[in-house]
Length: 119
Image (cartoon, rainbow, N blue to C red; front, side, top):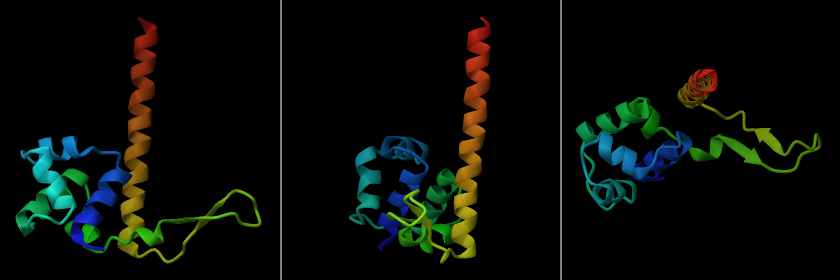
């Protein structure tokens, strides 16, 4: 998997749009899209900025492997999800960060809804 594809997968895991990324990186959406499609050269400095926006390390991007996330299949327990235990330490940390971020967003939204309903 090329670096642009890895960036795209991580961006999608974080539910960020190309527009959001482009805005944060102060570039056009079309220019950002070329980075994800590996149609444009990616400097290390730009990779550092992308990592910062995605809240991961450059190493996390470089070492990202989508196959280690989850294997979706029907198993004997019937829940349909089997965790692939082949996670590297960096990959595990990345997913813990994503989960923590989502928990914080949920908490923020709950408080926002409570404030809105109190009015």
